[in-house]
Length: 437
Image (cartoon, rainbow, N blue to C red; front, side, top):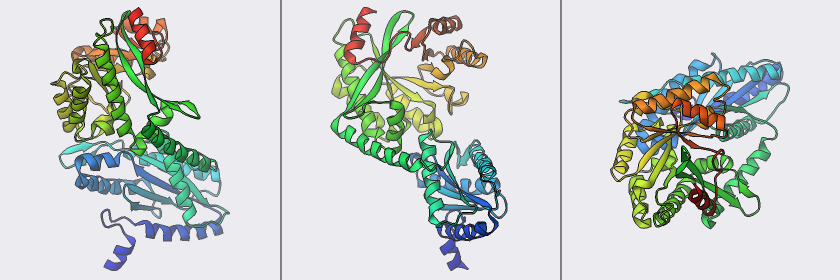
């Protein structure tokens, strides 16, 4: 019995392992060929699991895997299989779905959504709560089609990667065209690695305006590909995060922005400008991030009081105490902090009041329809009131019309960023713009 357990069950979670689910998949494919019914595979991959392991240790990582293993079976029926196939990946096999492919797809999607919903409740990892999410790839198998048992596995994996690319915490179905997408994805990652090595990136700057006065800029990275031209950040930043290239890229951005900040300090018309730099959660989680940044400041001669780090709410997914300690250490050296995309992620008021922040940033998603959507207007009003009560400044991004600006001003927000004032500009053009202001 013990030998059987070692061969077919995962030691950590006691779930079936890859070998056993492959055996059951082969049996299900054969059965489905006879009864013409569909089955489905759902590959569940935990988002940012490596970050948890790297920042808080494998013991807590294992604890999270065990708790996920307890939750997943509640999402399926008796006769279905939940397995851990390795690392942070779980596989769910659904059997005896509809004979109709559309109906079977709907049934599989329902299970996928139930799985995503189970992650909405935080996990208790010893003394602390942890918020986790998952990306799910889904594929059907069976019907009237006989197939090799490994093929559904491969399709589910491709679909899972598509879910990752779609922003994570979501599910995607396998599509026949996906192989082409995967090929393009792999080529883009290879190009991105080359771009980091060859220095194909440039910093653009978008103005921060208070009233009519430019008070600072946000540094925004741009990739000028030698063949494709300018590549959208929406395309390469998620890939940089996924591949780990965000670390060398983020270091380059900080170094370049601080160098520019030091140069502007010698120009009387530009010396008052602050520079805001986006720092990814993965970069901020690095154990020596504080030391790295202080070394950059020392090396470039930048004034830390003119440097603002923009963090997103996703940074609060793990190790809040460690985040607070790093922020406090940098605040003592003069660096300020803005919470970007506020209202779209993980933050709660209990965390917010403990973070040594200086500013809240109203997400452009709320600003876009602020004049026509009462909910967006209410959220903007709440953020402004919350910032005031906490003694924080507030800035709205994505301001494109005078109507949006005037409405925000009526709510008490007088700092803006957006195309109404300036698009992101190369350094030479932002300097001209700032001197005109």
